[in-house]
Length: 213
Ligand SMILES: [Mg+2]
Image 1 (cartoon, rainbow, N blue to C red):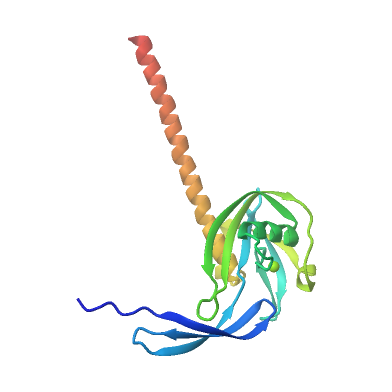
Image 2: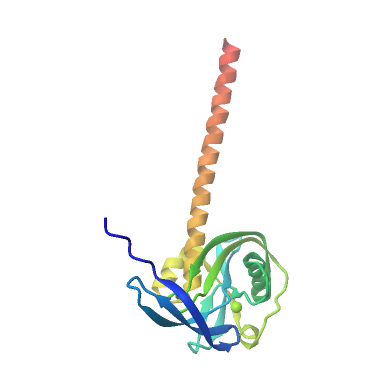
């Protein structure tokens, strides 16, 4: 058996630029062939996003101006993890209240993904918020002051993606995962209720057998 190639590994990193929440750095790495090389990367504090599902099965969204692409984007409430030591779930609850004025009676972790690992370590933690109640908004910054709240039925997700109306990656990933989680929950509930009725029938049959015997 030939020996396994050595894995890639990082052996150093120097900061090039600190700009607000972003840090641009140049890392030094060793490849499987033993040669060293450098790559420029962007360090990011991470973010959260929330699929807030109302009682009618609609996803609460915001339509806001995004400066990097100079256009409005329809997306789920989200924000950077820029409060020291704040857990992702707490950050999700804070963003949900700030951006759309909602609190969640139930908050479930959905999935965590890397937004664009070709150049940044940014991760996004996705949550599902249910049992919503109004708590009042407190928008942060000029884009949030001017964003509008919209809703779309979760069942329209594929159509809106295909139509180019949903173009935000975290929104598509989080809503797809939420839909899968809800389908799995509904299937489990069907199984539980079917086995509960089977148990009731079996108990009834057992009573009938005892009474008859
Ligand atoms: Mg935001």
